[in-house]
Length: 155
Image (tube, rainbow, N blue to C red; front, side, top):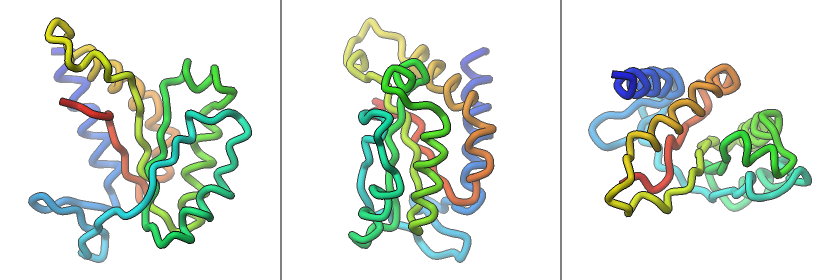
């Protein structure tokens, strides 16, 4: 029952986060009813340290002709160990928007256990769900400009 509640909560958050985008069939559309096909790069921002400069990185990505950028982020304890925090995520999102890129925030969690038949995937989903729920207020102000990538390499 708790798993269902988490999934419903994530689904609700996704609907709010896609206020500007919507799906029809297997296609993604923008608010002008134009099909949106993301073209961009992954930014391993969370793998860097506190010297990460989103203003420089997002400008360079925009100059490639990209229309989006996937911003890799980590769980809070991992982010903190790199000298980063939620303000750095907000800055990366804002800099993407400033450079006319659609930010796609991506939660990276160790997926090395996914192939293990004895591993319960529900725990992985719950952990990700708790993280996304903890970020709702932070992401809410970007809901009309942001896409989220809930999990990596889900099988």
